[in-house]
Image (cartoon, rainbow, N blue to C red; front, side, top):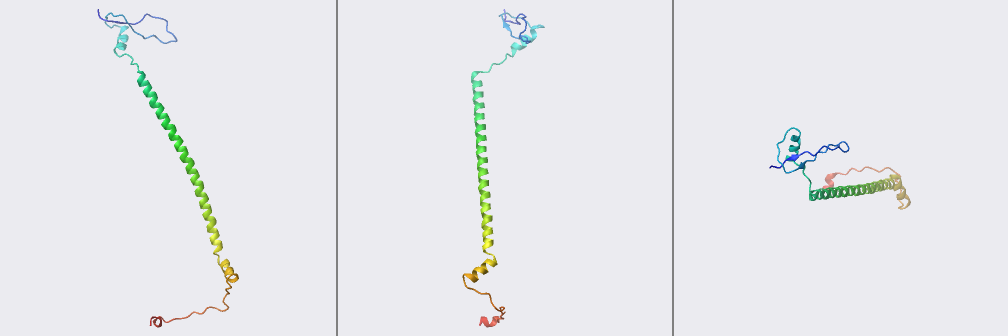
Length: 141
C-alpha cells in the first residue's frame, strides 16, 4: 500500500472560509477530480517560517527604525545649529552696517574741518592758493 491524501469530511465552514486541510491516512491513491487540487497542494506544502528568520527580520527592522530615528534627530540638531548661525550672521552684518555708518559720520568733511579749527587751531586760508610752475630740468640737476 502506498500513502494517500484525502480531503477531510465536509464540515460546515466557519466564518465563510472553506477548510482546505489535508489528512494523511497512509494509503495510496491516484488523483482524480476533486482530489486533484488536494494532491497539487501536497506537492508544494505551505512553507512555515522559522523562529530565527522571524526574529532576524524583527531585529533588522528594529535596527532600521533606530537608524532612521537617529538620522532624523541629527538632521533636526543640524537645522537648529544652522538657524543659530544664521541669527549670529545677521547680528554681525547688522553690527558691520552700524560701524560703516559711524565711519562715514566721523569722516565727513564738515566734522573734520570743525575739529581742525577747534582742537588743532588750524584756519582756513584767506587767499587762493597759487599754482607754481616748476621746471623739471632744474630739479634733475
